Length: 107
Image (tube, rainbow, N blue to C red; front, side, top):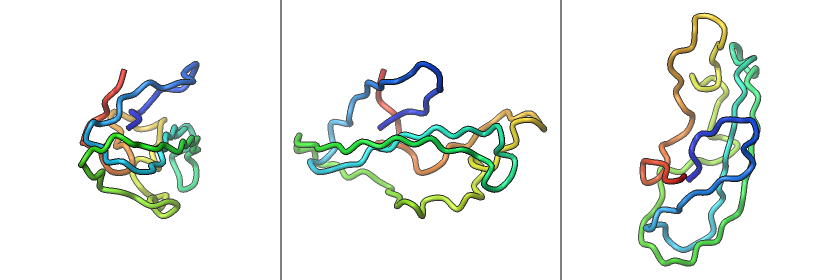
């Protein structure tokens, strides 16, 4: 899975798929959320990239929990409504379920 990333000059990601990932078709979805206007509903800006991935390695794991789009978020989640100005943001809760198998593997 993709790990959270910082914007800037990053254009490519190198990552390792979990060896237990079962064969099949997957959609990898990376997102960057700009929160400079995120102090109110519909203020956050989403920058999303997706890629279709075909896995043929015959692993036996099942990723989960899964989410469906566009219904995964309501727009009122703590990770979407976050005031970057005041009080100072010292902790951020990432959106969505944990990466499977509950960690991001990559370099």
